[in-house]
Length: 487
Image (cartoon, one colour):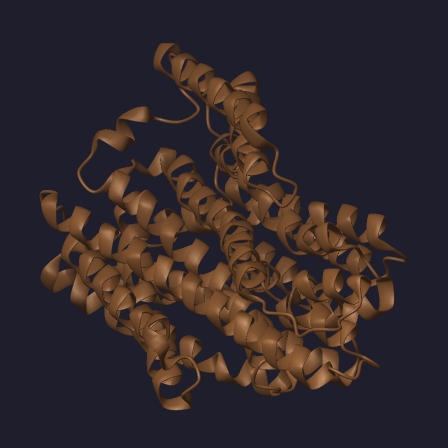
């Protein structure tokens, strides 16, 4: 009876954690549909447009491990409430930004708040749900919220931008944050600070290493130098952790069965979910001519399927184990993404099946991966394990935006067949992307031909990105099959 009552008392705090996690996930993708309205008002350049979207996850990713272990050292509720406060103030800064530099700074601050919130949220699940069966249900709920939030972002953005403009996408955050702070202080347990010292130098090495790798693949292409510097810093971090008496991150975590595959699963799912989401939002509006709201509504299929996968995941995990469920999720996502890659992009039925199947498969893979990571670490090190999971989450979101965006842009430019007689300036603008082609076609006699060529090239680029994503999931599924099953 005592366990039952404890379990009942744990569900209101879970709602508090879920609300904060939803906001953090939504803000990774909320600008996907709102970006055209933002561009019309602030007029950022092509590189600045990508940075406005990507700077949030790319700022959060390097800070997740330091922030997650901060909760282990100084108390998880305290760090979580601090993260809520930073996130709320940064949201106001985004909404009130007078120009691109101010918006970029506020979006970066938003990433700092998200880095404080996410790993502590997942680590608190160990405190609230010590029983693994109940914890799996709670993890499924939170993983579903995280994955669905990334899909719901464009839906929310489409509704808000049509009603009030892009600034409204950030104004919804502060009221929810205020309610979450009050509920957190009331419902969440006050976790005692840890006794082990916090390794500030190790945190700096970890943050710098992830930042270097993220910058190397970022929108401006930091290149070999940034990537090499990041690898060196991470190597120094690993060396320091091996020698430390109380390491910031227990590296033996990665020797446990299923953990490397779980980290890779989170990275793959989030890079695909966020990266392809941005491309699909553009395709639905530019090629199919849908309004922002209508385009976002199509993506609700991913949201519904992801929710269904999260609800059914605990029972599947109990029966088949994490490794088998994760492998099945990879295989289902690969099959679903192969549909539009093979030419089913223009059909609403085939596209709907692809969106639903990929959402279900990714939800299963994400839930099983998160459960593997949190269950592999002891309770007093749950913050570090959660930080590893959320680093994969945010790094995947940032790299997915840039990697799939760069791939699509390259394929688009290579397949764009400009009609004869297009002025050089208009041709350069049209080659930058399908949305830019609409602006370039204004007033031209060959506007219909130019728009048709841009839409055809955009379709080819999205199909190519889908094919690459499907191939990655096939490789992940085959690699998972070859590994020894892990519970």
